[in-house]
Figure 1 (tube, rainbow, N blue to C red):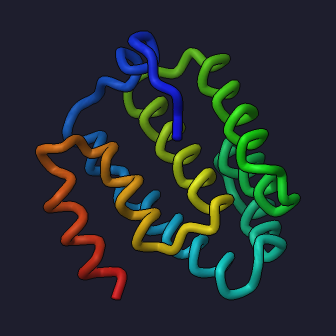
Figure 2 (figure 1 turned 120 degrees about the vertical axis):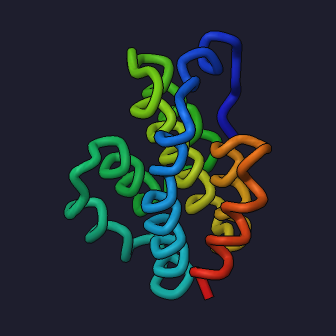
Figure 3 (figure 1 turned 90 degrees about the vertical axis):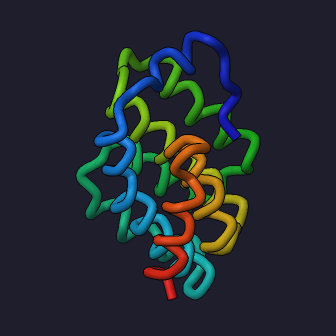
Length: 137
């Protein structure tokens, strides 16, 4: 879980259109979670090498290496604190890190979905959750 402070929360602010763009990222993490549970964390190395997202690439590699959860959280949180991203890029990075932490914890896809839909905001989370659960089956 990302440790929030006022500065990080301010950088997270973005519009509804940006939040809607989280759907493909969440679906990707659902696939990664299923793959990790079925084939193990080492199977995620192939996804790391194929990713265009540098944060996802580094994070998947760390997960595949079996970095302890607390250490992984420290490393990934440092990426957030060191970046100057705002709005959609920052939202995407936060959701990516939350997804990586969920993968590392061995969460099943249902738990992962519930963690990531929070980034939509409370007013949209339930509708998105229902939509994702319908598509995930």
